[in-house]
Image 1 (tube, rainbow, N blue to C red):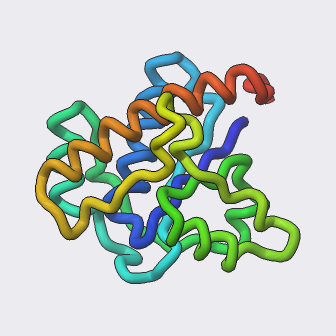
Image 2 (image 1 turned 30 degrees about the vertical axis):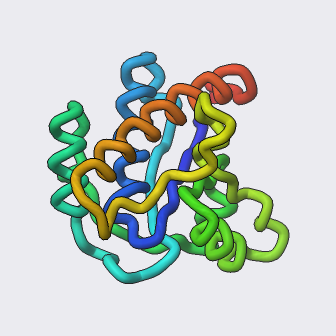
Image 3 (image 1 turned 60 degrees about the horizontal axis):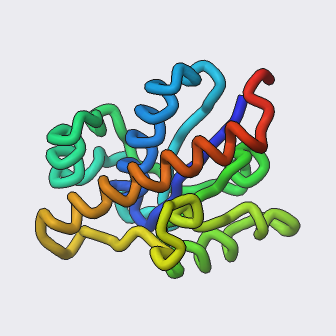
Amino acid sequence: MVKVLFVCMGNICRSPTAEAVFRATVEKAGLADRFEIDSCGTENYHVGESADDRSIREAARCGYDLTPHVARQITRRDYSHYDYVLVMDDINMRAATRRAPDGYEHKAQYFMSYGSDPHVRYVPDPYYGGPEGFKAVIALCEDASRGLLEHIKKHDDLQG
């Protein structure tokens, strides 16, 4: 079982979108039973809330379902439980490494490091922008999800 956690600030836009997109990517590959996939935020601003309505709408337009999502904050246990702790940007990288238990700071890595364009380092926060930002998040998550799955297929034991 490969365990993947996506992390943004509030867990209502980017990380639940990445979770849903990666889940669909894994399901399409016929590997859903070999993954545990979740998302969380570095901050507690939206704990217990659903995904942002704009994220839900854009995801649905692209065939992804964010309606079951309930926001949560990252925990110390997440670092030992998950194989991949994938953050969306520099602010959340700093927060994720700061919140990590001693010896687990290295677990946090950029989600877009699995994307096809080495010049794209992070998934920008669409929260204060318009619909184009939410569309861009979907496209970036689709790209990085494909790369992440290919990486995992090459480097991880999908049998266990």
